[in-house]
Image 1 (spheres, rainbow, N blue to C red):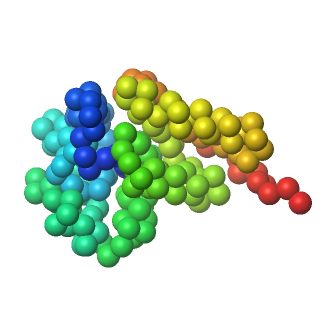
Image 2 (image 1 turned 90 degrees about the vertical axis):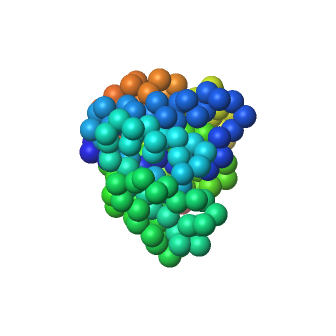
Image 3 (image 1 turned 180 degrees about the horizontal axis):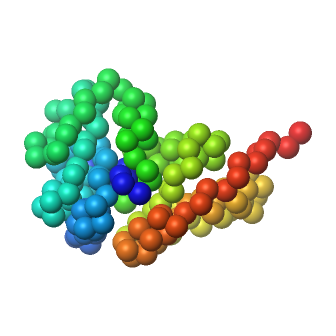
Length: 190
């Protein structure tokens, strides 16, 4: 695993632990020689993860839609900033550049980006590990909701297992390195 896309909030959240964990993830990525691919902003958790990578001598590549360049305050210290025309182009480029995905806490954008790439994995368009760093049990209710999708017959258990969720950064990186994608099976019953 040479590079990882990180989806996370452009805000910092209410708990200082979120910023600390984002920076710690960045440090761990650099220490493991894993390039960061992320949204390109200098603020919130996005800025913290990039700063962690850069402060530790790692490589941070931002992918930012032009229309968000001013709103998200592009990080000026990145190894590379790639400007694109749309949100879809952003995700496509991030997918092309990475070997795995990690979601930190965030809002609608974080979930949308993570779930689109997770759906691509479910459809067999890639076999990358899809991971959640479950800082402060932030994603517990979402993970429980996805179990309900399985229980109600809307999601196969094998597809739920595609999501790697850990509270510890090193445990998450190890799980990602050891990940093997399930065989894609027919998901629609006739």
